[in-house]
Image 1: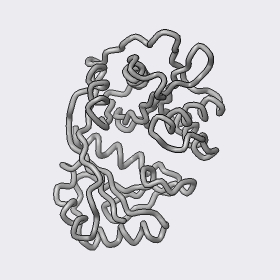
Image 2: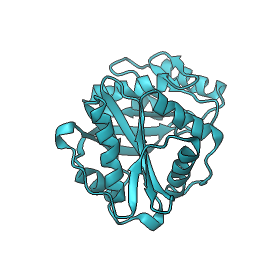
Image 3: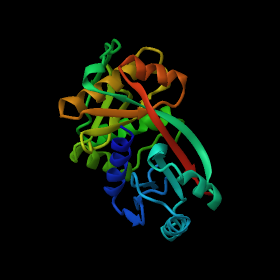
Length: 250
């Protein structure tokens, strides 16, 4: 499973607007944003990485005026962390990733006075992104580039789901990357503060996953940011499967 997850990350980074290949690495660059959570690198699973490869990777990030940063499944590059640490990288986080398959998915009810739908207009996409930003404590305004990025994801086969209240307010949402080898990452599950503690995050996660499985995806995966989100994801059928590392250079 680790290799399937890691390979899906490689391919999705290769689909960024301006990807760069550096030896065993792929850097997913997007000229419309400097966010290190979008512009990062990952190694191809099973390849041998040398100190010279890491030096070249850092140089490529500097040339692109982006922060050197990687995300990857640790078992797919067991010796890489030591090389990165020697080069000056610092661990940001270690996360357990969870997976769900059609047979384990459970779909809880959507809370009253809310319904789930796919954003079909740019105004809806902007509302979804703004709700996610607010939920994550970021600038709530959605940029044109953010909206275009989400539209492109949907057009390419990714999933987006928004929760809308009876009065038309976007309460939260989430999405999933374009599947690679029948594997897709679920991400951005977010609920605005006034709508929390009602089971909405579980309902959104389940609906995103359901849409993936209906379209033929075999494995959905995600990461939990804490105990609360861990419980949310386990409630709808996600189970721990492997480890991922986030590591960057200032």
